[in-house]
Every structure is written in structure tokens, then in C-alpha cells.
Length: 115
Image 1 (cartoon, rainbow, N blue to C red):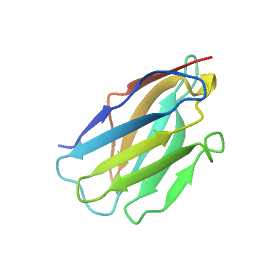
Image 2 (tube, rainbow, N blue to C red; image 1 turned 60 degrees about the vertical axis):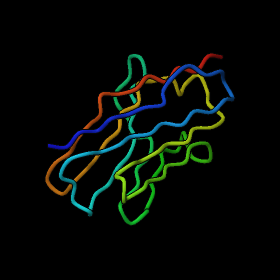
Image 3 (cartoon, helix red, strand yellow; image 1 turned 45 degrees about the vertical axis):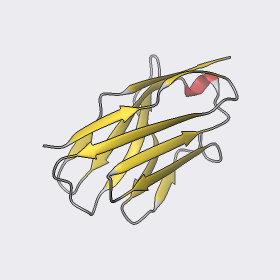
Image 4 (spheres, helix red, strand yellow; image 1 turned 135 degrees about the vertical axis):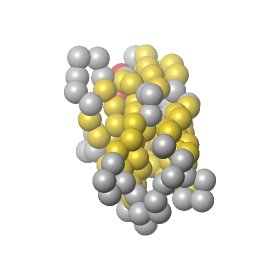
């Protein structure tokens, strides 16, 4: 069974930075994609950024140049460094692990950006 545990959310002022981290445990095949999604108040869940086990990244246009995703394959950890945060970045952020035939989600961590 795969488990994802997130950490690092919180309250920050606009323009500030936060770093989210997600650790995956269990049986995880080496060929996978990890990433972050978010769901703001009254909105649908949306992609923030993903990174494959080969290091290929993908970002939502709204976070390009402000957020950086990285991973440690040996530890099955994926991080999201968020800078120049805006009020519209306020959301619950979910860690995601995608394998060939299954997908897993973390419990979510709240990020609140005050303007």
C-alpha cells in the first residue's frame, strides 16, 4: 500500500515563500510521476506541477517562474518551492503519485496567502 505524507503548508504574506514536501512510502515502481495539485475555495482541483522519475517537469502557467518542483528518487520525496506567493495561490495542496496503473493522493495541506 502506498502512502503520501505532506508537510510544509501554512500562512504566509503575499510575496513570501513556502516549501511543501511530500514523502511516499510503500511499494513504488521506479517509473513514476510525482506532483502537486491544488484546490482553491469553490474551485476544482488543478495541476500545479509534476516531475517524472527522469526529472522532466511540467508547470501550470499560473505558477511558472514562481514555483519550482524537485524530487529525491532515493527517498521518494517531492518538494515544491513556492515564491512570490499571491492571494490566488491560497488552496489546499495535494501531493500526487502516478504509476502506470494507479494513482495516489496525499491528505492535503493548507496554504493561505494573506494580501
